[in-house]
Image (cartoon, one colour):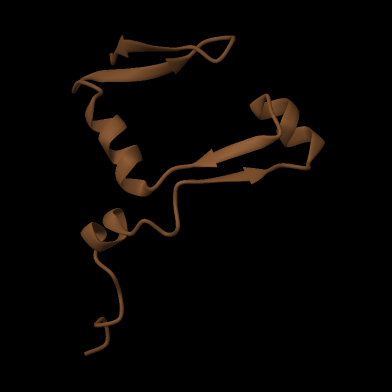
Length: 74
């Protein structure tokens, strides 16, 4: 079969890919944008867990200073 080597969504979600890990950033534009010279990469399953905490019908709004608020979707 042609698609035997392809992973399904569930397999990709649970693949840890040597994560979590920190990576040093040397690009000055990225340092200014993200506010530091280190970036943290979490496994996909951790991002999924955070997204599941957002109630249905709500959206995340980023505020100045890096804060995030929940707002009802219109």
